[in-house]
Length: 338
Image (cartoon, rainbow, N blue to C red; front, side, top):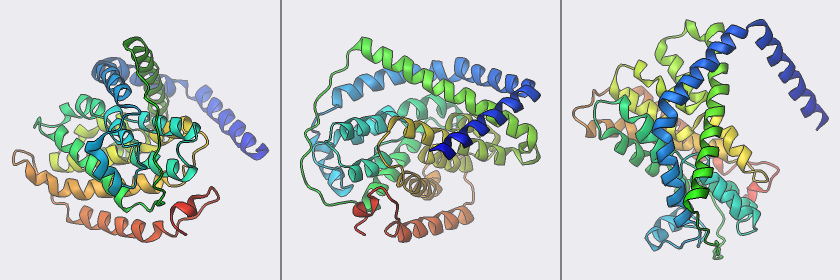
C-alpha cells in the first residue's frame, strides 16, 4: 500500500511539473475537450442517456422470458436476464454499475460478478447513433454497428468459461422516476465529460511529443485505444468507409483505457481480472464480424481486410486457448473450472 501511494504521489508530482512547464498544451487540450463536450457529446448523448436510464430503471429486477434462451447460453444466472438488456441499452459503465449493485447485496458471487461485468457492460445506442451516425454516408451503418456489438458480446458470453451455479437470483425491482433519472443523467454526463477533458489533455501532450510523427489514421486508432469518444470523433481521418466500420466496431467493443478506468471505479470489490481479456476477445469478434458485414451495404466503400481478418482470428484463437489457463488470486480459477 505504501509503495502504491508513493508511486501515485510521484506520478502526480511529475504531472504537475509537466503542466507547469507546458501549460499551453494542457490549456489547448482542455479547450478542445470542452468544445467536444459542448458541441458534440452533450447535445447528442444527453437525451439518449436520460431515456436509457428511464428504460433501464423499468427493466431492473424484471424477469424477461424473451432473454431466457440467450441468458442460458451465456451462462447468466437465472433472474438477472434484464442485466443483458440494461447493458446494451444504457452504455458504459451503467451495465457494470447494475452488476455491482447485485454483487453488493450478495445476490451475485464474486466469480459471477467478475464474469458478468465483461458481458453486460457495453456501448449503448446513445453513443452509437449520437456520435457515429454522422461518420458514415449510410444511415444503416449505426444499426449494423449496434448489431455487431451485441452479437460479439453474446459470443463472449457463450465462450467465456463460467460456473454452473443454477440458483435463481431474486433481483429486486427498482423504479426510477423522471427526477432521479435526470439527476443520474447529469452525473453520468459530467463523468463522461470529465474523462473526455482528462484524456484530451493527455492526447494533446502525446500529440506534441510523438503522435505527430505517425499517419493520421494511426493517430486515430491510438487515440481510440485511450478514450472511446475522442477516437470515434477522429474516424473521419480514415478515408475508406469499410475500414472505418471495422475500426469503429473495434473501438466500441474494447471501450478503451478510459472506459476500463470508469468500470473499475464503479465496481469496487469485483475482480477486473477477466475484464480486459474478455473485452479484447469481444474486440476481435467485432473485427471479424465487421470484415464480413461491410459487404452487406453495397453503398459502403469496401476495404480489403484479409490481413486484418487473419490477425484477429489468430488473436481470438489464442485468447480462447489460454482463457482456461488464466489464473489470479481473486478466486477466478473457480469460474474457469481450474
